[in-house]
Length: 358
Image (cartoon, rainbow, N blue to C red; front, side, top):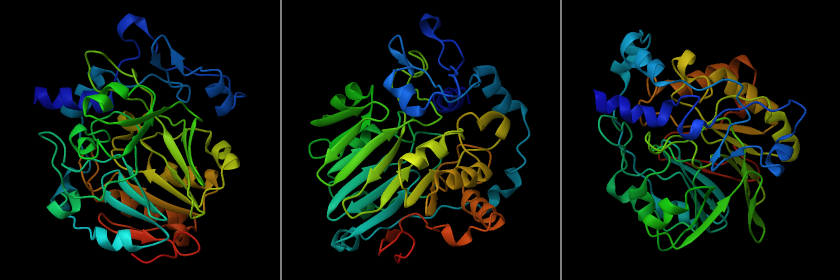
């Protein structure tokens, strides 16, 4: 059980102070734009990074213990409905499509096919470590993903950056990440590495990949502490035409309208999962209600949610998030703008997102 708590500590908490008395969370004036924050490097601090989008400190170790050992899980009675579903993907069908498609592989792993160029996001293909159970394991053929041209990493938490999965593509793919992951990528043998700061862009002809701020943090090792590397979301301007926003792990923040003003987003993909209990998770992971709010503020045309159904990282059942987001979208009168997709399914874009067939 002690091992379990240490594992969870790398994903869900850190204290407000760490090595060298560095403050990891700050709050900047509301009148500053995200671009101004990024241009002035105000999220950089003495070899680490700080989160300017969150006014409060994150949870400390005592609060983690309180959650895991001394709080009541109101959802536990629903766990009996959670079940393992092996995921199978026909990659030949995905590859043969000549336009734009997006495949929900597992957890937060996405494969975007953009006119024959593949972009793999946060590949975690082999599950996590004990005692975290994998409810949507990939069958062997589904792990044999065609070599992607690009791999995007949102941040360093273990359910998003898996060295075993990345090593599978080390010699072929260009690995694109926020600042601070070069050592890890070189360690797994990656030959082509591009690190981005917030609002930096990687251009490939008519295709552009932009790293944006989000309200999160990162840590690989509790000894070295948090935020030795950066985290972020991505905007992908595809060569096929549509623009895709990938939130990465994020709590709600009040700048989605600003992002929506900068980019005309066709499909917003939000990480929705590990959001309960709210008293503990609200600083790291967005809720269903706030996902709808953020979607509206972005002005995106369609919404898709991932980061559910694979690992039980929060109190909620693994299959609850898609049910909850459907209810919230119905309440907002936006049911027709929700793309419902399950693990292993592919959305093939026609003229606009949401008109493709799975």
